[in-house]
Amino acid sequence: MKKTIVLSLAALTAMTTLNAAEDIAGMFSEGQVDGQVRMFYIDRAYSGGVTDVHRNGTSIGGKLRYETASLNGISLGMGFYTTNRIFRGIEEDALDPTLFNNEGESYSILGEAYIDYDMSSLGTKTSLTLGRQRLDTPLAGSDDARMIPNMFQAYVLHNNDIENVTLALAHVTDFAAGTFANAYGGGGILAATAGYSALGNGDQGQFTNMGMYAVGEDTAGVTAAAAIYAKDGLKLQAWDYYAHDILNAIYLQADYGMKIGEVKAFAAAQALKENDIGDSLLKNLGGDGEIDSLYWAVKAGATVSNLTAYVAYSQTSANDDGDAAYANAIISPWGGMPAFTQGMVTRHMFLAGTKATKVAATYNFAPHGANVTATAYYASFDMDKNNGYTSDTTATEPGFDVIYNPEAVKNLQLRFRGNFPSDFKEVDGDSVDWSEYRFIANYNF
Image (tube, rainbow, N blue to C red; front, top):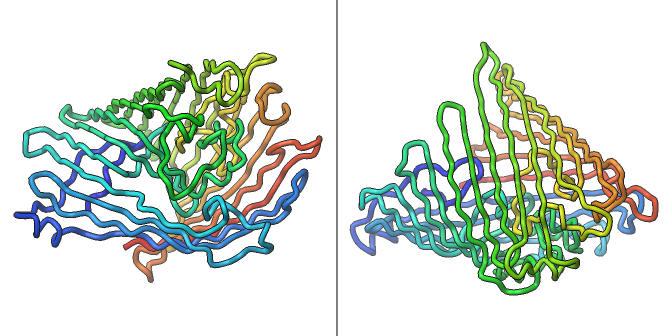
């Protein structure tokens, strides 16, 4: 089945098409279904300056998608997403909120409902997708970290006529926050820099105007353009997001990989520049509505045999005394999170003045007879005194991620993850720390 047209951070690939139907009846009868069943358990035990010292939750759900065959280049698609609470947690008021809606309950959403027009019959490698769809771009993304991902109402055009180049143009009008938004349900500068709204988590299961979700007022949405070049181990990306009456963001990334003997070396750099525009509705979040921020990062690593390791470093421009918290921070309210230095849960690298470092290593056990990959990482965030969220401490986060694809059950993936932040925030001089474990089972069909 053809995947939903997705603006992807990794690449915008050439189009693929379902077998063409001869008539409307064949268009629907020759359509295809795919989906995923997901079970997710999460357990977080706090220590330090918090009141709910232990919370957890379990849910089962997933997605069911259908896409018609193509008729004269036109196909239709829809995707239904659901999360269903099956365990109430240790105590009712200690339920982990990130698997459910903002009231801690099950919900469902028609996340995809789109028309796709493949123009290859006209002699051009161009596709236009209109409607509800999933996007994965640097500053507007699905952020599929829990049960239901973020979804978008968008109009997306992309073209591959130039060899090794993809061009894309999109206008996004509405945003439906997924369950992970509840991690930042309290809003504030942490939410705004971690991929969600400074105003709170909104209403899961509903599509909301992009401006209303981000700053509390309807806007014309976000217009984005991208160009990506990829050839011989080199990939260059340039993105421009014009969030009407909020901000303009320019994102650049370069990746290069090469083989040196038995070693596959790679290096990457990224930069993100934001400035307020128009009426600058950022003033709804406090301050004067001005933002002039810069984030940059570099990463280098190598693969030797079954082991891949890398180190990354980033800096975000700092606030002066008296600046609004977001003045020199990176605002990303629609799920986008491209940073090389983000932890599994700690996303402090976009707070103003933060200097972050991350090291990670992944080992593939397949040559030893086990279809397992295991990752360990350590991230450190040197916080500036004017970051707007916490004191000038150093937050750290070690963690692991183990993925097992059992051969006995095709299309089943089992995943075990853990993260252990320290000094995530200071509350009345007391450090907020926790230990979190996740178990996820995904069955794709």
